Image (cartoon, rainbow, N blue to C red):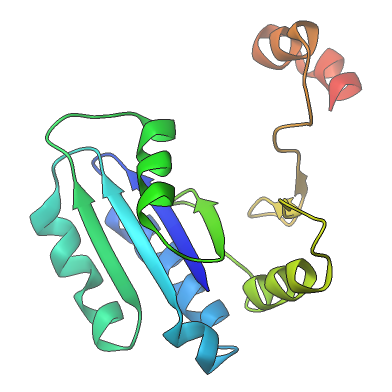
Length: 161
């Protein structure tokens, strides 16, 4: 039902483990979802040995994890596209390795998609470690918005968020 791709390049293992812990907790809200979901970690930094030992415990606890290693860094977008093309799931989640999901995030997101068949994609509400809302990429940003986000002082950026 669900595939989740995570692209890493020389990952911080503690951060990746926190993400995997949160995925496991969120998938565990529904045992069928846990059994019918797969995580694909795309290794853009040729760190296969480290990743194999990191994911062993998660696999032993029921997570289906596949590591795809690349000798070259194929890039973030291409790596996720590779995962999507090779997954045969109904839904796919693109996840950064530093994201921590709330325990009900996957259940609620999938329930919403199941009830609203005209919806093709959803985006979560994101918070930082101080529980402050984080603004992620906006729909169809124009060149001015992209420039402001990249170089403007904070007091100007707030008008473009």
